[in-house]
Image 1 (tube, rainbow, N blue to C red):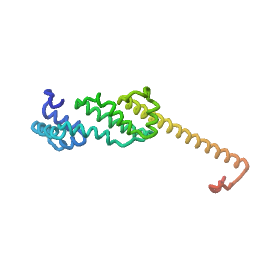
Image 2 (image 1 turned 90 degrees about the horizontal axis):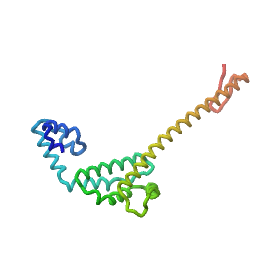
Image 3 (image 1 turned 60 degrees about the vertical axis):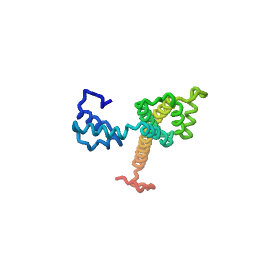
Image 4 (image 1 turned 60 degrees about the horizontal axis):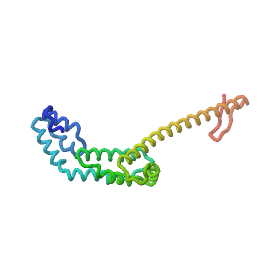
Length: 200
C-alpha cells in the first residue's frame, strides 16, 4: 500500500497518486500542489471518499449489474463486458471480499447479459450441463468468442479487399479487350451508355 511505503517521501507518494489515479478519485487530488504538507490532506480526502467499504462494494457490484446486454456478434461489445467485469472483480479482490462464495452468482449475472444468440452459443459450449456455472468458465467463453470475432473480422476484411482488387482487374482487362477490338476494326468512335469512345 502506497501510504505504508516508508521508502517513499510524501512528495513521491503524492506524485504517485496523481499519476495513477483516474476518474472520480483523480479529480479529488488533481489541483492539489505537490508538497510534503499536502500529501496528508490528499490522503485524507481519498480516505473519506473511498474508505467506506459498503459504498465502494455497492458501486462495484452495480457496475456489473447495470452493464447493458451485449451484442454477441460484436467483438467490441464483448470486450467492454470482459473489461468491466475483470476490473470490478479485481477491485473486489483488493477489498478482500470472499469471491468464492459469490462465484456462481456472478457467473449467473454475466450470463444474463448475453443476447439470445450468445446464450445459445454458451449452452452449446457447456461441458458439464448439470453443474452450476463457474465464473471462470463464463469468462473463458466470452474471451474465446471475442477472439473468434476479432479473427473473423480481419479475415472478412482481407477477403473483401481481395474481391475488390480482383473485380477491378477484371474490369480493366475487359476494357482493354474491348478497346483492342475497336482499334482493330478501325473505329474512330463508338457509342456506349457511358458516352462516346473516341480514338485518334
